[in-house]
Image (cartoon, rainbow over all chains, first blue to last red):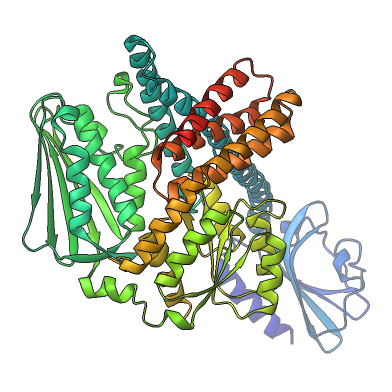
Length: 496
Length: 112
């Protein structure tokens, strides 16, 4: 048997080239020394006499399981020997194979240390992430809240200044001053709306409404908005349209118009002389709108940040919060498109909006508001204003819907429970039980029919709250018959 | 798109005439609210009540496309809202609301 052991030891020597200092110590069933192969001094072991107990020097022998093969990966014994220990039991003897494991031991120590450090870093990172998330939520709430708080007094300033400006009995100078206040308050309001909209986009709360619309209407609106010589202060405004433009496309007309107003408005803002040209074209199922100006151009180093929030080239000009282009670019993405810039210093800029859009036809619009099947649909109108009830009754009957009415939230809840209703048209500013409370209560009682909220509030936050509570759509008052019909039809078509 | 039938247009016209005919009643409601407001020294509940009435007038006038009344009512409503927000003791609040309120009454009483 000892020959075999010698062979194993020789092999170990050859394999490790003595680097791992292999030593084999044979002990009997009482852990008394039998023989050894290798250098005992490598492990600071004494020269054992045959039959001498090895327990003191090799303490790991005590209490070992009676198994054929035992491995102890790293053992620290006998005055800091660090070794890997393998014990082979053959008949009544045990053969203790020792291999030096200082490197492994150090590596393990380092690994443990690194692992602990990583754990600590990870915990710290988690804490920081949580703090950042809380800070971001607080920031969004603050911006949203402050914007909301600012809106009301500014609306009041607008109201007052408008009243003053319309008062013929006042001195012309006073009226001029009132107009200046009104203009600046309007500007302030648009800044706040931008900040709020940016917060909504960041929080991914902004909703787009894809529906077919006439491109012609959009282009005419843009023409009317920017075509006035009086407003353009000597700049020429060109509007070009390609013959390849489809008549009707599917997109969000309001958001598309918002992007264009922002980009064209900027072109006018920063161009002192020359022209602003807007061209509408259609390429590869995409609407391509180019806004070209003869302004000062944007330096290359500012171009890469131009669509970042709060980034403003020419910061001394005091012309906005630097959110318009960021919002436009994000809105373009929401509409499956992108906004790009090409600009050369001294030669003007070209902003190109490319939107992927499905082509529709005038029939698609008519089909969208096909009223032939409406008679079967029953609409519950929840409105406390009798004048509006009568008006809505005329509109809805005209479009073929049958109607029932409730003038308060509790009555609406009862009707929804007892009657078959296909759609609810709900005033959000009801007395006592508010519109939001009605929606929440209906949704928690598993009421499935679509709900359209109506309010005079222009606050985006109110819209978000209504949609979050469970409204499917939101209409601004005064209610326009076309928007009412389009909204009802869109929603009912989605609800089958 | 979605043009109203002649019959519906007639109904709307009739409704608008009825709405205009209700102006004296609306003036009465406004005046009642205003008197309460003055007698209670511009307490919050009375301001809310006036704000609600103004909100309704603004909404219904807007829906009937009577723009001057819509915007006058909306301006007065906004003053009520800002008073709720910032406190009714705002030094210019009463004067401003009175001015705005009187302008609305004037428009409601003007011959159609």
